[in-house]
Length: 214
Image (cartoon, rainbow, N blue to C red; front, side, top):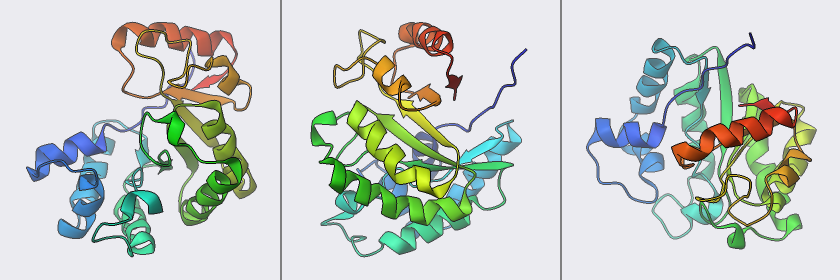
């Protein structure tokens, strides 16, 4: 039987549940300023429930997401806080890296040279403190390739979590075949936004292609 790696649960939804705050585009980021220690508490509880990987609360910490907000100048501070909150809470840590622009919007992914520069800065923050670099909600092939180009020099394992078409699990949200992402990486998973009816088919496709499921 293959080894199973159990990742943690959804940080954003658990933060809503425990804080009682109204969700905003940056609620999971602001909470580290407004409620210190809450993220660490959730990391520990996921580990107590059996998770062996804690995912850093850094999905939305991108400069373009912070622009125009009251934490616009807190980029470095927010990464430091997220890494402090996750430290020592699980056997392994995955550094979460979200999409540039917005989730589920492959049309907003920038040109390669810009994307690689953005991701290189983020990787430099995460890599020294994590065991795995995790690119989440990957919706197009360019997103995967640019993320890998930025992350490979760090020498850490790289996981990619794709987001697929709601009706066709063989295609990314960009319309490109998922198999085109399989050609650029070995560790591939599917984001939680996939409909349950598609998950078994996606898992079969990844397994048959000889890729590690994450």
